[in-house]
Every structure is written in C-alpha cells, then in structure tokens.
Amino acid sequence: MRPSRRPRSHHLVTGLLLALVISACPPEPRALTRAEVESITFTRLERFSSEAELDAHLARVEAIRSSLATGGGPVIGCGGEHADGEPSPQTPDEPEPSITHNQEAGVDEGDIVKAVGDWFVVLRRGRLFTVRQGEGALEPVTQVDAHAPGFTRGTWYDEMLVYGRRIVVVGYSDSVNATELGLFRLDDAGGLTHEATHFLSSSDYYSTRNYTSRLVGGTLVFYLPYHPLSGGTVSLPSTRAWVRGNETTAWRPILSRLEVFKPVQTTLQPMLHTVVRCDLDAAEFTCTASALMAPVSRTFYVSRDAVYLWVSPGFEWWTVEDGTRSTPSDSVVYRLPLDGGSPGRFAREGYPSTSSRSGRMKTGTWMRCSWPRARAIRCGGRS
Image (cartoon, rainbow, N blue to C red; front, side, top):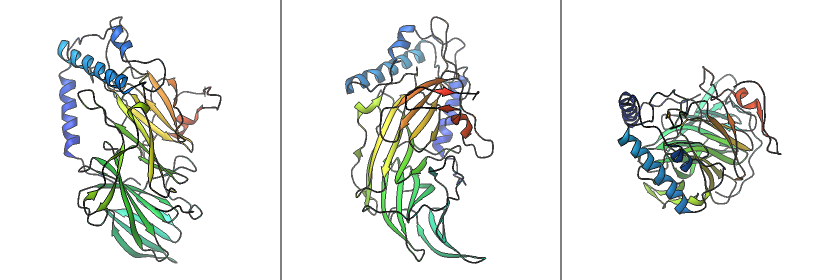
C-alpha cells in the first residue's frame, strides 16, 4: 500500500519550468565537441583523487552547460524521450511474516500497515495506531503522533518498517530539507513509545513508483538522490538528531567528497546517486553512505547484499560534432554493495519496465542478469 501525498507547489513550479525549457528548445542547438565529451566522461569507475578534482569536474560541467545555453540554446529536454526516473544493542524477536508485497525475500519494504505478533501497526495522517487482532474482530488500542514530542516543523510521513518491536517511521521534512526517521517501541500491551528521531539531509526521495526504504536484517537501507547545486557545488549526505521541541544537533557528514565515484556516463546534469545504510543494532544510531555521479533518470532495486541502480540519459539529448548523440538506449546498471565495497557496472540497452498496477519495477527484468563473484556478467533475454 502506498500512502497518497498531495502535490506540492515546488513540484508544480518545476514542471512549469521544464515545460518552458522544452518549448524554448532551439531548432539546432550547438553540438558538443568531442573534447568536451571526453573532459566530463571517465573511462573507469573510480573515486575522485582529490577535492580539487571533484570541484574541477563540476566547474567544467557548469561551464559547458552555460556555454550551450548562451551559444545555441538549452539542450536538456530538447528532442529527447522521457525515461522513468524518478538505542542499546538488541536481539530482535523472530521475524514476523510480512504482509507487505516485497520484491525479494529477506528485504522488507516500507508500508503503511505492518503486522507485529498479535498487532497491526497503522501509519495514517501523521499518526501511528495499534490494533489488536482478536478472534473475529479488530480492537483499536492506542495512537501516537509520528513526530517527536514538541516537534512542529512539518513532515510528510510516507512509510514505516518493523525490526523486532521497533517501529521505524520514514517521512520527508521540507522545513529541515531532510528524510526524517522516527524510532518507536511497541510494548506487550500495544502501547507505542517514542525513542528517537533522526534526519538524513536529502532531496525529496518520494516516488509513486517505488519505496525509498528497505530493511535487510538490522540494516536500514535508503536510496537517496542528490542534485548538484548551480555554481558547481554538491551537497553530501549528513545526519542530525532531534533533541527536544524543534531543537536538533548539528549536521554530521557521513560521506566525504573523496568517496564519490566519477561519472562513466556523459551527463550535463549530474546527480549524486547515494545509498545510505543505518545500523539499528548499534549502541548509537549510525549511518554510512556510498555515492556515484551519473545522469538523473534511474530505477533502483534492492537485494540482500546490494543496491542495483539502472541509469539512462533520460531527458538529456544532445549532438556531438561528429554526428553521434546521446540516446535513452545508452544505459548503465550499477551495483553498490551493502557492505560498503566498491561499486561495479555493466552496460545495458533501454531501461526497465514497471508493473502497471503498482508502478514498481518488474523483478524479472533484473533477475535475467546475474552478477557472479568473479565479476563476469551473464544476461539472458530482453529487458
């Protein structure tokens, strides 16, 4: 079940601006030079060697994009096809049978109704409800706010996960510009106690096509996209914790600029694709992250040991001086291990389809390709 969310004004503004860009596309925008393509495209998936190298890359992309905008018109969205993108250590109880329609066994997904023993836990309209499963009847027991006590900065709450008797509520706060994680404890009488609230700095993760959160064992897994800002700067994921009322701790980075992997796909609108892992078994709530640069259009899938990210050029459509051009068939599938190891990649054509009912990616699209330990790729059939 996917909770609904009313359209937001900034989404509408973004759509109007995109429409204006597309309508303003010149008939013959300036072609990229081969030197420009090579200067912003790397041949190996490796980390930037220094902060200066990362800054220089972003500056080059910004300069090329600006020159295209002034020397021949914008190229983003011109003539292209759309590609979907859009507290102390504990030993948990035995895993409960999940009532969520998960895409893979052992990888739980967010939902708005979860079963915990004899209880249903329901997330609705910014509150958590517990309901007892009786004989032939359901008995409402308690309700609590999904936000921390006294916290008044607005948040959209979208989904929750269950780890033993711990309930994790996931939402997005526009006022904090962060993903909000509320931790609650379910007791034997069906009562709920707020334990802590943490924030992950991020753009709005929300998608009608896919849940953002996963639970693999005691590890919370999030796919979070970060858009590089104008001027050639990039935002990196950080965490902060709720203290009291609207007071929070300072931001604490969980990824350094030297841990970002270079883009192997040519893009004038690079996005930082980030996988965040948070340990629910740690004595102190801690998170780590992995990130790579690639075009914006993406679909992700989470297995028990890695996040797979299928990235295509999407709206980016430009010509090169020798007559070649970017097309939506120039895609790359990335594998980001959940143990924090180095990512892998292989080229694929097109982009994955989704089921018409739920909007989720069809599992079979991914499972046709295996990723053996020897790092060779075996794929069969067509996507």
